[in-house]
Every structure is written in structure tokens, then in C-alpha cells.
Image (cartoon, rainbow, N blue to C red):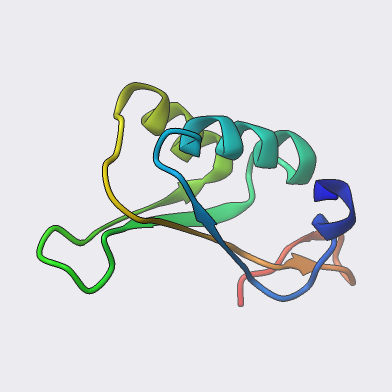
Length: 89
């Protein structure tokens, strides 16, 4: 399933458990490319809201040692089919 979505041109938004976050980011980096720009948002609209921005591999490395709590949203940039690289949109 992840391979099918690798060439989706629109940004993708995923909801994930904090316990699976690092593993999911690693799987996405493997399937979609380690340099795909992404954001991990935690506790949106709440007192302890936090957003980390980076590549899938950077975020996977960060969350491998920093266990988040709360509700997690992952936003991944879309693929640019014409250039064969990730989109900057």
C-alpha cells in the first residue's frame, strides 16, 4: 500500500499512535524516500501543541529517542511526477 502512495502528487495526512510513530516514519522513509519533507504535529489546538519539520529520516531519528505523547498527525509532501522528485508545494 505504501508503494502505491509514493507517487501521490497531493500532500498526505496520516494519524498515528505515538507508540508507532518512529516505526511508521522509518517505513515511510524506506518506501517514499528518506529526503521527503514532512511534519509531525502533536496535540493540535491544545495547550502543548508542537510541530517538528524535517525529512522523513530526520524525523524518524528524532522520534526514535524522543517518545511523544498525545495525538499525532503526520503531513508528507506530495511527489512531483514531472521532475521525479518531491514537490515543494
